Image 1 (cartoon, rainbow, N blue to C red):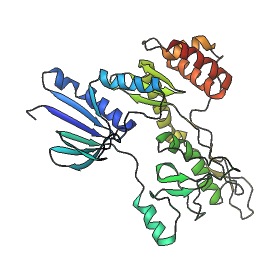
Image 2: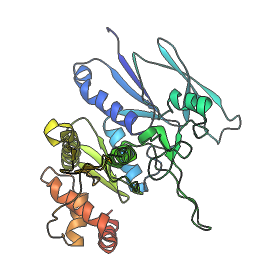
Image 3: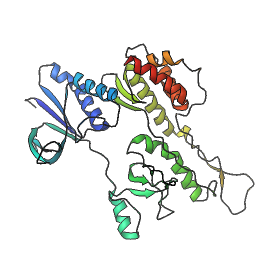
Length: 340
C-alpha cells in the first residue's frame, strides 16, 4: 500500500485489546519509517474492562494511550464495506438512542467480537429438544451434563451452567465466556465422559465448581503485559514473563509424553470395564509445594513494581497465597490501597 495504514479492530474485549496492541507493536516499524499508521478499537461499552476496579481501568486507559490506540466507545458496527466500517452510537445519553456516527475508513479490519453459540445447538434443540438458552448456549448442570439429555456433555463457550437455587438466595450465575473456564472445566469433562461410558468410577460424576474471579493477562506486544487480579493493576516485563510461563506450561500438557494412560485393572474380569489410572482432575497450575509466605508489606510493594528486576515466580506465589488465605489477601490489599 502506498498510502497510510488504517487498522480498525472491532470488539472491545480482551481479544480486541490484545490484537490492537499486537498490530501496533508488529507494524510499528512501518510508522517509524515515516509511513502514517493508525489503530482504532471499536467498543460497544462506555469503557474498557468495565467489570474491573477503577485502578485497573485507569491502567488500561494509560496503556492504550501509551501505544496510541484510539478507542471509540458506545458504538456498534452496522456495515463493513471494502473501504469503510459504518458505526452507530449506543450512547444512552443521546435522545435518539441510536445515532449515525458515520463511516470509519480502514485498510485492514479485524473482527474480534464476543462468543456466539454453535448452529448445532439450535439444530439439536429443534430436532430432539436439547435444552438451550435464548442465545443458543447448551444448558448443563454442574457435571457439565445436559439438563435435558444425560448422555450429552458440553463445556466452555458453547454452554451455560444452570446452578440449583438455594433457598431464597440469588441464583448463582454461569461464568463468563473466557478461556480460563473452558481450560479448567476440561479435566472435569473428560473424567465425567469416562465415567458415563463406564470406563472409570462409574457411580458418581465429578462436580465442576468454577472460580469466581481469575487472573487476566493482556500482552502489550513489546515484552510487557498488563494484568488484573483482586482489583490490582499489574504491569511490566514480569507480567509478560508470567503470562508466557503459564501459557507454555498449559501447552506442555499436549505433549504426548504427558498424556494420561488408562489401563484395565489386572486380574479383573467381572464384565464391568472400569479402568484404573483415572484422569487427574486437579488443575495444571495446582500448587504442590509453596515457598514461605512473603509478609504483606513486601508482597504489596512487589505486586505494584513495574521494573525489569521483578521475579515473576515470587509475584505469582504472592497472588496464589492471596487466593488461599483471605486474611493474608486482606492485609496485602490494605498495603496496596495505601500505595495507589
